Structure formats: structure tokens, C-alpha cells
Image (cartoon, rainbow, N blue to C red; front, side):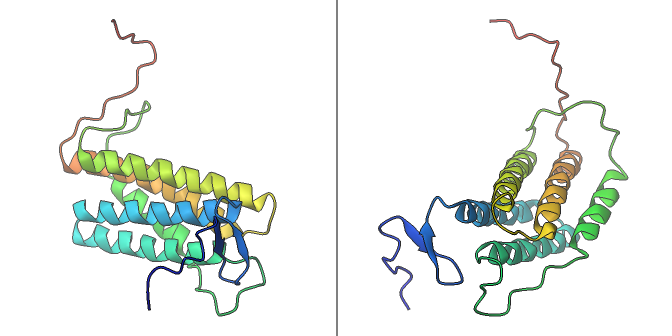
Length: 185
């Protein structure tokens, strides 16, 4: 089977139901951004311990499932859709609680950066927020499972906490944002 089909050469793509839509359709923006997020989470695995790798792989599997649900109009799936792990949100919360145990309290916004892994976490977090916005936009016009929005919202929190965890793990300085400080030219 060839990877190229040429069916998208005129700016449309197929949903899992077989329906063709423009590549800029809100459904495509939603699941395409979830797919982008999944790639960034894959990169974060490169910096993770074994336990954290397992968590990140589980997140990636959930993101593929979310993408599948977003890639088909409600009630039009031609095959059994992957199950969404209802406990997934609770697992993210438990992982955040565990990471936070040894972190200093957060008193300010933190400037992204300090270590490449920390920066990748912040990029992943912002891509997650974009995916969430696209899903919420889609949900304003079409039915979207509530779990998907909740999961993406919690995942962005997880990715922020992971940035703080990695900062501590790799000895990176967390620089608080100081809105009163002015940079002189």
C-alpha cells in the first residue's frame, strides 16, 4: 500500500466516516492539533525516567483515541471507536500531585525556558491549549464528547507541572515573570 493517495491534492480530506471536508474544517483543526500535540509528547519521552515514560506513552495512546473520536462525525463511525479512559483525567491529576510534592510553591508566572526539556514542555502545553481551543470551537457547532475537552484541559496543567518537574530534575532555574521590571534599551 502506498502512503500517498493524491485524494487530498485539491484541499480536501476524508473523515473516518468517509465524508470529505476542507482541510481547514474545524474538525480537521481539532484532530490535527491533537496529532501535533502527540508528536511533542513523544519528544518529551526522550527526557523521562522509566515511570514517567510509561505515563507519557499512556497519554499518547489517549491522544490517538481522542483524535479518532474527533475524526468522525457523531454517530457516523463505520467501525468500533477506541474507548476513552475515563480514569485518564484522574491519572493526570495523581501524576501532577506526585510531581508537585517536591517542588517549591508557585508564587509567580514562570518564564518558559531554562533547559531544552523544560522548553519542550512549554511548547507542548501551548499546543495542548490550542488543541483545546479548536475542540471547544468544534463543540460549539457539533457534538463533541465532554471527556475530550476535560482531558485536554487537564493535560495542559500536567504539561506545565512536567515543565516544573523537569526544571528541578535538570537543575534549570525557574525565572519568575516580573511585570514591573523594565528592560532598558
